[in-house]
Image (cartoon, rainbow, N blue to C red):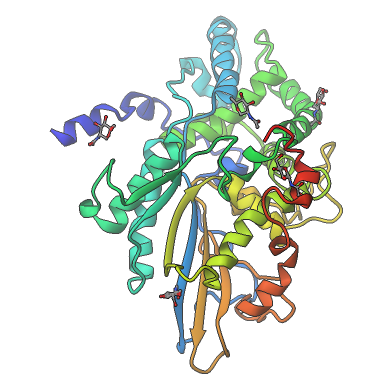
Length: 439
Ligand SMILES: *[C@@H]1O[C@H](CO)[C@@H](O)[C@H](O)[C@H]1NC(C)=O
Ligand SMILES: *[C@@H]1O[C@H](CO)[C@@H](O)[C@H](O)[C@H]1NC(C)=O
Ligand SMILES: *[C@@H]1O[C@H](CO)[C@@H](O)[C@H](O)[C@H]1NC(C)=O
Ligand SMILES: *[C@@H]1O[C@H](CO)[C@@H](O)[C@H](O)[C@H]1NC(C)=O
Ligand SMILES: *[C@@H]1O[C@H](CO)[C@@H](O)[C@H](O)[C@H]1NC(C)=O
């Protein structure tokens, strides 16, 4: 019984008990779910002002390369620990909480807050995001045929590719062990444009993580102070506050709602959003030391150019590939897109007009879609454009970008990326930045 098995694994009870989202702090149009950095659920990116989303009638998309992030997932073990510690703290303080006079947004705490979140794996909303994307892709590019998918070899990425395949091909695609689904290891010996940092010995997650610790020391204490005033006797630590922010993001990722999201003010959520941006910028973007960010991202850009120029003579018309937020962030960094000047600062304040916005760039189930197109009249020769989460992102790196479409000619794009095309894995430039003594 496929259906009963399916429903048996749905977390129905937690869904019901957390299905209240107090909204009193959010009278405005502020939407928490689009301010949770790379932990935001999928949403189409805001359209860039002035950019046209559809191609002129005389143009045809000839080739597409999709880099698809996995869908919503449970917290990583390193994040989950903040939530479970918060849950214990609250359970141990239930008497004090019952006595507290709480705003309506926090009344849920009187019934106790428990959590059934798992870790690492794709969630039910994550499955739906990927299935939807598979269906949409089939409808958007009916004339382009894919015969295979390629996924980074990590469970949530592979499962994402499977749900996409179900939507894209239907059940005929062959299922779990079909040769249709190919994988590429995500380890420290496999050179991959999906996980380039893994083969760069000098790369460290700490580059981003240390920035978030610095920023956490700035923005979390005032929130702890505010909440502890409302909850006398509970003594929430800054780590507990961090846990509550994660609970907001991950309840949303797993259940679609969270009582915690209504506990925070708009600016508190903005500060958490900034933390997530700092993490990605520091570990997979412009705040990596020297040129490490663009060098790592060059592997993706080179693969794109190799395929769109049919350099090896065997290029396919459609590539469906599955990876990570990090894959997309490093690619943007190699392209010089979403770049802030001056760089984002780990001591804040959160710059609200920043260009690096992981909630728009790499929400769960993010899609970096590259189109090569040709036109009978509008343009001469092959053109290229980028749709990031279904909205065009202007290819400002090109010399002669088309201002209406944000596109440029493929030749222009190739010239504009000479930084990337001059680099290959294990050459002098790569080694000078990455070290790679152990290879
Ligand atoms: C897929 O292959 C694995 C290992 O070869 C096997 O254990 C599993 O049962 C197979 N699954 C399906 C659905 O055929
Ligand atoms: C991160 O911070 C730790 C502790 O302060 C320090 O030892 C380490 O060198 C830092 N790492 C990076 C990459 O900045
Ligand atoms: C790449 O070139 C080969 C050989 O000319 C051709 O068969 C193939 O269709 C080309 N691929 C694309 C996507 O144009
Ligand atoms: C870069 O490092 C790799 C691995 O140690 C080595 O095989 C390669 O020769 C080096 N490249 C250059 C240009 O020195
Ligand atoms: C790769 O990882 C393995 C095991 O995790 C480790 O033993 C090895 O030293 C690593 N190799 C490199 C080149 O970093």
